[in-house]
Length: 277
Ligand SMILES: [Zn+2]
Image (cartoon, rainbow, N blue to C red; front, side, top):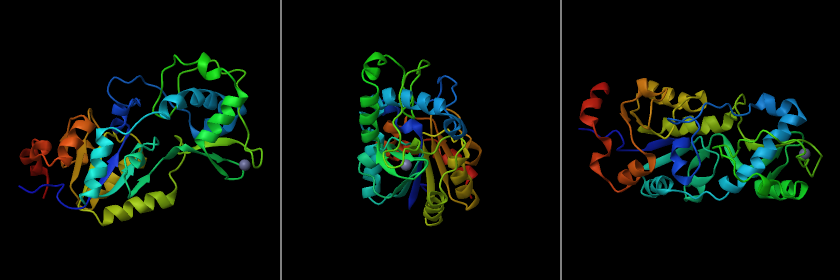
């Protein structure tokens, strides 16, 4: 029986991969229904920006200290072994990079970068964190017992009095350099992903519910091109109808087993391969 992951594999990862690093998946099973701030909300008023940065300032202490887990490390090993040709991640936490992954696109950007909406200037998030701290002494200490979110945000209703630093270059508005809901992924990033799929033999999706089109489009693209699509996720995904194989498993355990060459990781394969061909 053919192994659909035997060849050049492009991997797409989502929030489920980082839950074992302590970053919660707000779309995973049992997660509360919450809407993150949209791009349109963020740019609409200084109040929205204050609300965002006040929460992000507190959330950063957690996001910033997260470490790569066995899943990130397994993928980096699979790349080094030539089994993963390219990685697309929807995560903004930078943990794949820290695990040593080389050929990849952070589809939604990186939370470690800040961009000025007015002059385009970029600064590192640690610089922003220092400026936020200097402008709001004691804020983090007063708000430590709050729940964190995968985008570095936290639940925090009371943000009055919080001061948001302006761009040091032009005095403009600062935004984390990540793709917000309601914002498009830059075209050149998407093009790199399609190019990688054009060279690939299979697509492996790990830890994404494929709720948003930014990820789902790659599953559709791969399926249309006749590539096998393997989806590993706890819970239903929007890509399931297009999957060659769907596996309900934890990301870290499954990827670790795959990187060790366990042949049973594609359990139920014989049955599911009926949908191939
Ligand atoms: Zn600026």
